[in-house]
Image (cartoon, rainbow, N blue to C red):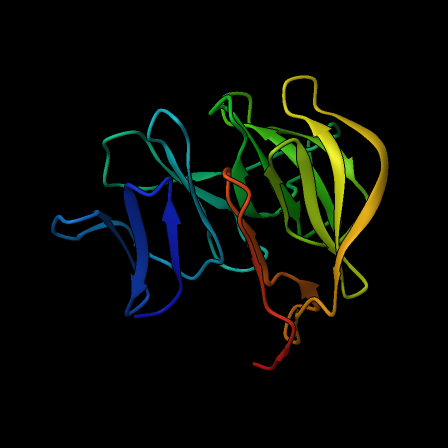
Length: 193
């Protein structure tokens, strides 16, 4: 079994043999979405699943209750493909954070319009937790107040931890995860391909 991500304590997503599986805790696992070469799985409040495809590729979406994935191409204001990865749904279940590989910036995407709005000029995955936007910067985990309704950042970013791990193949600080109840885990090492 490869990477795992627990969503809302009810559904477990996991990867085995490059295939994405979903299991309601205590139930049988079912394959969903087909081949998985990505980095993060996120589920909206309505059950829609969004995950990264290959590095630099497009996102994939599985509608609520579905088992087949469809590509999600996120476009910038100028219409160019943002090459989205590392998605995380915001509380409204429609908008989500993602890292644009082509621009090395964090955007807020809209699943309906398939457009992205620049949020932070930093090359790191980002997560929303308890009123804060979390992201990596030069080996530091940073937190900045963020309103998920207005999509507005507030105040200056603050350091949460130092020594945040980095992926040597992509050079992106990626090794942290947060929860809506205030838990935070991170890795402080250096990964090689």
